Image (cartoon, rainbow, N blue to C red):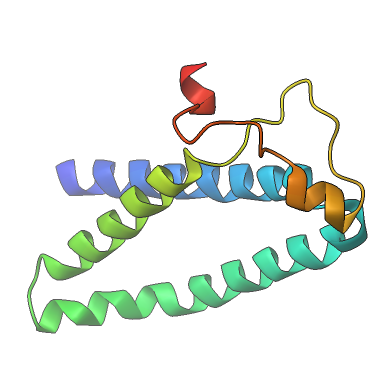
Length: 115
């Protein structure tokens, strides 16, 4: 029951992070490329959904390896997301130039969730 509970919790967290990523992409991408960027994220999500069941077969090498691999992906992705610029009360980028300049005034250690 412990493993099933962790699996359900993991699936819940994956769904939340995927939806947050889509929302963040819609806010960070300039208007002129927003639809293409969100479509690319959807496509990569579908590719990952197709490939995810095959991660189980890595357990042939080591039984703990699939959990380590998925956990590592989650931790690295979460850490990288901490450095995305804050969008609260900011004008969203409209052009590619606006997108390049968006978040430049934010320092490297100005982590949005700690502000």
